[in-house]
Amino acid sequence: MSERSPATGTQPVAPTAARDAARAQALRHPSDAVDVPASEANGAQHPDAAQAVELEPALADPLGDLVEAMKRPEQVDRTTPGPARDAIRDLERRLLGADRTMRRREMAAGAGVSLLSARKIWRALGFPNLGDEEVFFTTVDQEALKSILDMVREGTLTEETAISLTRSVGQMTDRMVVWQVEALVEDMVQNQKMSDPEARRNLVNLLPEIIEPLEDLLVYSWRRQLNAAVHRLVLRAETGLAASAEGRDGSEDDAPLPLARAVGFADLVSYTSLSRRMNERTLAQLVQRFESKCAEIISIGGGRLVKTIGDEVLFVAETPQAGAQISLAMSREFAADELLPNTRVAVVWGRVLSRLGDIYGPTVNLAARLTSLAEPGTVLTDELTASTLAGDDRFVLEPQEVTAIRGFGDLTPVRLAPGTGSGLVLD
Image (cartoon, rainbow, N blue to C red; front, side):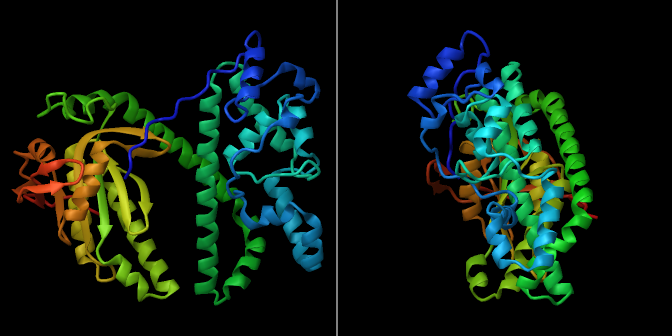
């Protein structure tokens, strides 16, 4: 895991006196500024926007191949049979909420922003590059753009924060849509005995039945997750920082970082060699079983799955005890699972920086290093974390040989084993 510092951003957009300064900044550094000139609310095109340089390549379209194909309807008309073409068009109207009627300049002018500003939002959402003559946008797109930029105009958010929040939605929903599409295709291949191409074509007929339930679930889950985040933020942050001070003198590398968390990694043993011997279906089942089992254990233990990276998961918990319980449960459950290999697990209690849905800092790096040192089926931690768990009879702590750990020098890893009690109880 590499450490990254949060990027420094631009200042909030002022809708009045600072407008000229914002325009000048856009001319000097066109990729750094989102200007929202009032003059464009009447449909005038910002003169600088037409000369704006192209920014970084766009991310993949969140709607995948369907929207990419529908960018150029004449291609769909040429290659798609009539009934399928009609089904795709009906599905698009339902997904987008209206017909595409606007080109990018019309869309930006109607929202009262420069093309440059609009493009930054579109790219944060993951939309593709568009030419001036492509009819891509709907009135719903325009209202969404206005709602984002209104928060900047009103001073609720800075431009940097608005783009960051927009990017979080674009990237997460992109991954979510790909995940859902692949799960549906896999289900049709396995349970309805379709070929992969047949399943993907049939998806157009299935989606209308599940759009609303999935949309309701998305909003419900987002509200629940935000509520849980508020509780963590307000009720537990100070308690965690106070607890993280135990056994420390303030000189540690992670001392300036704001959040106290138990950081854990779990890594499948021999995954690379196993994956070479597996066919596509078996490998997919192994990966899905590993991730779903990790997610279940972490959730029951009160932690949060930060991300999965192939054969490895990164998670956090709010106390060292919770992190230790999750780690031991993972080691135990994977050892008992006949379909999955053993895991190496490590957990470290320290301070981290949370940005872009990920975590950074020396604590994360140390947990990753210890994971690579752990024997299959075991859990390692460091001395500071072990000191916070000492005296808790649920844990047995066994110091190992002093080891040189890259970036940290000579350290004494500590093997974490279950003590008294049943440990984390899974349903």
